[in-house]
Length: 118
Image (cartoon, rainbow, N blue to C red):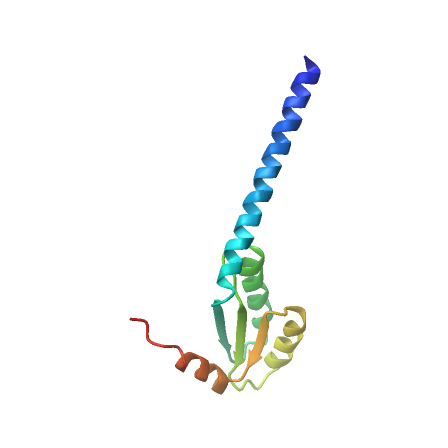
């Protein structure tokens, strides 16, 4: 009787694990369909030496690791800062491959190139 209960618990856990694996594979496959079009997040900052690292790390933690959305690229633009914001952003760019630092002119071109949705 004890063997039966232990086997029942073991098989229940195994089936639950298999269902979770299939669910994760389905989730990853549904995200892969978004990669073609992509979701871009543009962050503009100016003179945010004290706050920018905390903010960028929280964005990556919530969006990338939290599986809320698939973000193809996080574009960060520094609006002519006079402090060390750009140095902090470069350090973070080495750590996070999906983060790119762009200048404001390039950012404006990206925004202007978006077609009107009808």
